[in-house]
Image (cartoon, rainbow, N blue to C red; front, side, top):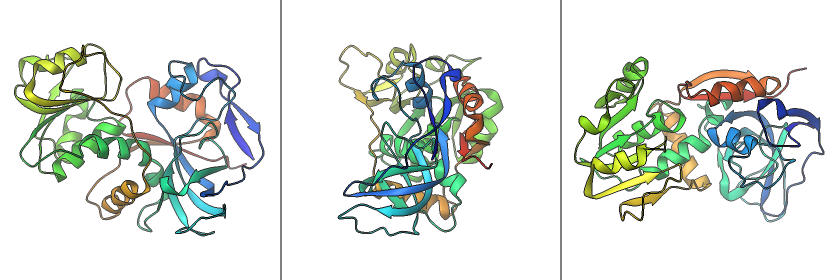
Amino acid sequence: MRAITQNTVGGPDVLETADLPIPVPAPGEVLIRIAATAVNPADWKLRSGAVTRLGPPPFTLGLDVSGTVVDTGADVTGFAVGDEVFALVLSRRGGYAEYVTAPVAAVAAKPAALDHVRAAALPTAGLTAWQAVADLRAGQRVLIHAAAGGVGHLAVQFAKLRGAYVIGTARAANHEFLRELGADEVIDYSAVDFTEVVRDVDVVLDLIGGDYAARSLRVLRADGRYVDAQGEDTDGDPRYHRLYVSPSGTDLAEIGALAAAGRVQVRVERVMSLAEVALAHELSESGRVRGKIVLTPWTD
């Protein structure tokens, strides 16, 4: 099969196409023929060596997959060959390929009303957003940084479904988009210091990091919750909660049902071929993508 691999860490130019064996599903796994995958910030952080969770190269990136089950390992129940599925894959052999294996606990049936492109945009961003706001209660005030991004735009919608009052930071060009998704307030971070216009927030979802950590704590209630997706140091503040996304077919099925019913929109900024993966990484790394970039397999 064809797959994107890299033999060293570095810029987008280290990504290359290679011929690799089709993986064999282990017990409790399914083999998926990939119809679409997606780009996440974690991908280019792993590619560059800023994050080392996969260990040293070579490896194949790609956390998000949507496709069709073509084989099953031993002890697999609930899925069969021919089923259309989507999943979050945490593996050294990821979704930038024609085939990938995934444990059944991380896999969900793809709703018929959801095409593979939108399904592939959901696993990492959707699960991160879903798990970040899982404890929100109706009436709480939540501040979401980078609200127009892949995770942020879904978190806005999930928070609204839970009855929260949602404040988002984003460039002015994205304000109307966020209002359409249900945001109650939007702040142009390039023109306004959010610490001067926001107070008494119950929950902060920080998708940026850096000095946003300490600044966010200043607008958070004493009994509030700071949900950090970036791993920033907050000097032991009891309100701090480090967010690590967990693969969950159960959660993903709920997210997929909401998207299929039109209750949640997943924004796909651009669909590209895996042959253009280096350019896709450059676009994602620019921080100017609204929603997600989805990649489809080679066509030649």
